Amino acid sequence: MGARGLGKKKRLAKAARKIRRIPAFVMIRTNRRVTVNRRRRSWRTDKLRIPDSD
Image (cartoon, rainbow, N blue to C red; front, side, top):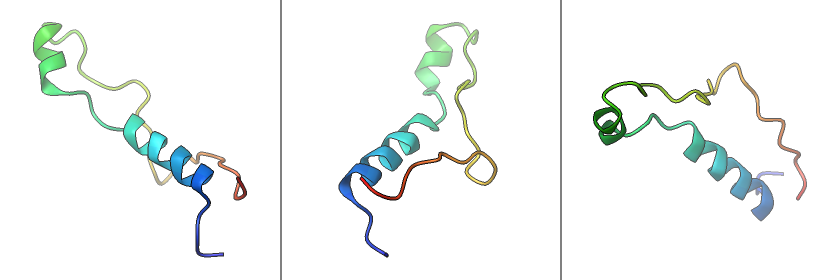
């Protein structure tokens, strides 16, 4: 039960990469037109619905 399968770990890692804030150079390059990541997700409220099995 404690060990996660490889498929689930890869999907969790992808979700963790997607919730990062945008880099500061993006704000500079776009003259602050882009300031937030629209796909930002709260870990507490927005659940991923990733199945337990691979």
